Length: 309
Image (cartoon, rainbow, N blue to C red; front, side, top):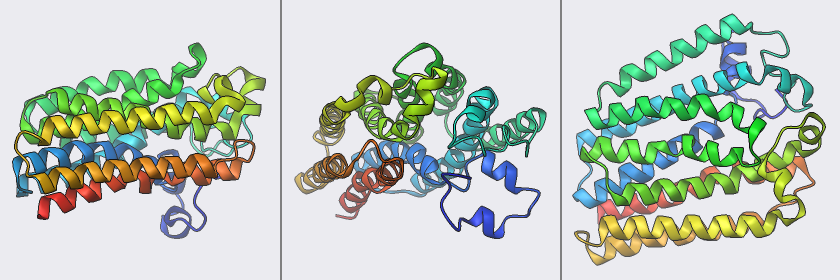
């Protein structure tokens, strides 16, 4: 695969028959799973600090979210490739994907998508009713996203709505309800997705222009850096508000300072990415995009530190 991690485990260790299906799920490109999982950990970590302890229940939620993120990212990518098979065949970077290259049939892809989604659903059933309802509701966003680039210049916003749903779900699974704190965490994640997926989309601007696919990368063009700065500011501000609303009433001062410190280090990382970015260099765009795993884990690390103090 053109944009897979070199020497990834799928190419090295997976059975040959399974490789096309694992590639369909992007198992050879783990960054997407991380970006789906991290908002879950923002919500779960904030709820745990608010509760004052990381319990066995929180541990299972962390494990369940990780497995579920891997499965649902795979199911979502499979659905995306089914709907985009014609477009992918016309783009240099994606024409080697399993469906346009003929490695997997559409029928086989549908079966593989359903298997992944059903296993994820079984994990979801171990959560509480509110979380289960939210998990089912997220399917609407997953279904719509692949079509967004056909009718709007902002498909990255639809990706943000889908990819950050875990902030709401994990919070609800930990607390049994929703509230303003997870809503702000969710909104922060959407702004972050607009940031990193605009960078990602700059890999394909030439091909996208030829085939009429819309994206924020094409919309912003040479003004991308200015837009990224606004997305960075929005993400930091919204994440700060969410943490203050959740933690200020009950957490001690040190916990609150640590949590907010993680947000500002996260913001520094996004600013560093903007300085590193060269939108006309696809390899640079991919490298900067992948660095968002580390950026998103920074608030998680600081929340973990707040939990042990």
